[in-house]
Image 1 (tube, rainbow, N blue to C red):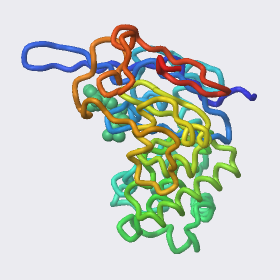
Image 2 (cartoon, helix red, strand yellow; image 1 turned 60 degrees about the vertical axis):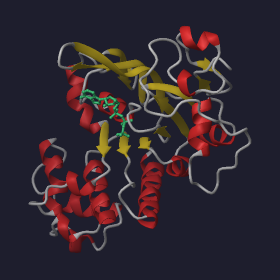
Image 3 (spheres, helix red, strand yellow; image 1 turned 30 degrees about the horizontal axis):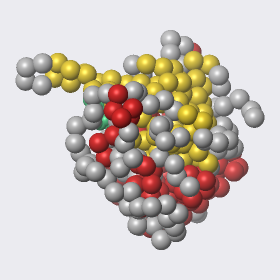
Length: 317
Ligand SMILES: Nc1ncnc2c1ncn2[C@@H]1O[C@H](COP(=O)(O)OP(=O)(O)OP(=O)(O)O)[C@@H](O)[C@H]1O
């Protein structure tokens, strides 16, 4: 297989926090490794607080990892100022709320054209390039959109503007953080289809961050399931959905409202509700796992191979 566009090696992130009497550190992400190739979509799924956005912020260089490294085309990001400077042309982010991400005081032409000037991609008049980008994201006739303000557009149109803005820099990777969660279902599907078309035409790699297993299944080639800052399972989409291995993935799938999921496993009964403090040692899921064994309470659990391109963090495998 070709060299990955993006590689995360044993990424970790600890945040310092301070309570009234003492300082402590909270491990938000731990031991996260994955690869993304051109033309591939990797979905990161997991409940709120599982570390998805922290991973996105580390790979886009918004925050430094506490451990591990991020590589683009095999080159480490850390300490490489030339690569860090070039990063916007390699990786771009799309956010959940396109309205918050678009400056309401500027016209669409300015919003899309500004990064092209700042990064020296189009010197001089950017109008024709902006019109081309509007066409590419389906905002046509482009002349009708270029002079509008964000408030004059619908949610789906705003998300298309966001996509046009990031495409202008010709990135190789797009990190999309819940890109359709604020849109109506049918509009969300249109945006996902647009993203899939752009991926095909430009051989983009996507990291799709989502709570929604339905969107992950619709878009992604591979799914990576996070629990409490760790990957618990990653593998090809259809295989992971049809035959999940980790008890947490099974729980996530069985609690999904999606009509397509057919459970070929005994329903998981949690022993403790979500939201309890994490255990001090051993498997992070031990309190909630009905299959917990003595070793799960004491030994940290490493990722293990569970088939071709498949890994799971569970002593049962
Ligand atoms: N700057 C920060 N300082 C301290 N803790 C943080 C910081 N950023 C994130 N965290 C904590 O790290 C953990 C992971 O957060 P993160 O935002 O990555 O989760 P998430 O899976 O993206 O959640 P959501 O789906 O709600 O966005 C959470 O417990 C969060 O409170």
